[in-house]
Image (cartoon, rainbow, N blue to C red; front, side, top):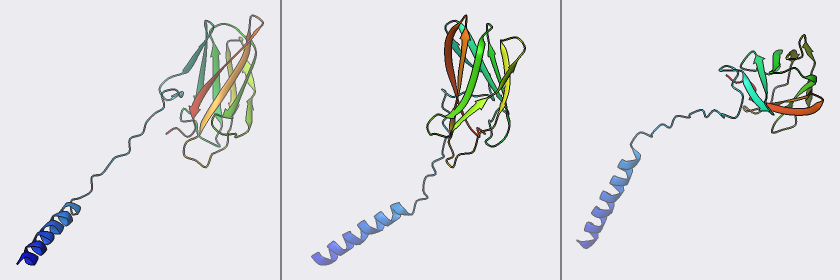
Length: 149
């Protein structure tokens, strides 16, 4: 009798454990976290402040696709000289992409660039800007996500 009681209790316990497993799994949705330190060209022009000078960058198309021509517009709040920009991978070496700029007023600069695609789904590029203001060399950078749909 004691053996039957233990077996019945054991069967009841096992049946309850199996019952727990038969519940449908809870689906966890993947939320996309946007890194707020990256430029979001679809929302706004990206700006940096360097010693009372505002430097703005805009790239079109705004989702910055890989292997497609990108129109780059760089704007300064006061006239500058010797402006140079290059694009590099922030977290991995992808080469150095120089951008040839044109200007009419030493405040607004335009250029075009193309960068390659990366095998990962998350590639952050850095646009490094160097220039002279009143004969003093200065620089800043802008980080943005490639293929930012």
